[in-house]
Image (cartoon, rainbow, N blue to C red; front, side, top):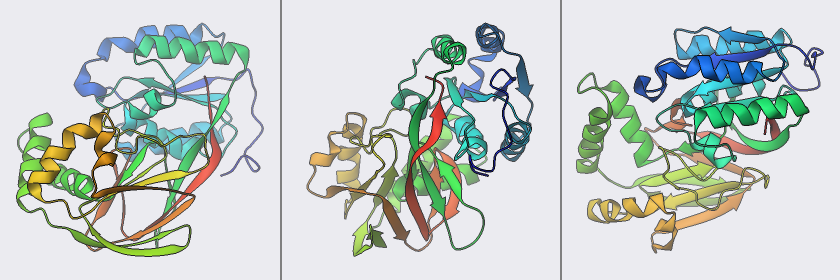
Length: 308
């Protein structure tokens, strides 16, 4: 669905709110009432969207948008935002993220306060003023199936492999599962052969890390694509070449400051379109399982209207 074929929207209509009750491992359970109160302060009816799974979250968001809501708000982390984006990308329906997850990179990188209630107030003020700001999104396509949209970063290397292993593990729970997945995959670390086309120019190389950023950060503040700007109509592609285990461990802390680009085995490219292929990798977009390689990623300027 695009802005051109979207049904007419009542600018004074209801605001749909998608809530992830498990976001931030449940730390923000008491936030919903004050968040709703602030949004209602914009003089709009607030309609809660209930979902028991990620797929259901996308479905209820699409249904709300097709039904003519005036805006969509996501209360949660990057995963919740990712599900909501599938409904509003390319439409005229404005969107607001209330950061209440473990990772809130998209909200932070697009200028929202880190405090959830402050972010809700920013969204409410934008609703009152009828103000929105355009930001870019990335459009992800593969050989089969519908396209996906993402707002922050696509992981397509070691980071994606770790996520895939962690999601297959049933023990331990919480963050320790991810830590264990890192240890296992570090022991198995090897460069993989990638084929890339950057704005049509082919490259073939060995790498352990490939990230495609619309925004700078992923994983709760890791500035993997530090120069990415979600308003420039471009994507930043960061490639970590033949990094061995010891070098990767040494480089990893610098990713939080974005200084890893200084390492001679790390390169960055700014393009409009990326074609990316490698064997045996499933990508993760905004921290959510996405498409298996090969994929094409395209920057879509102004694909989202933010309530900011």
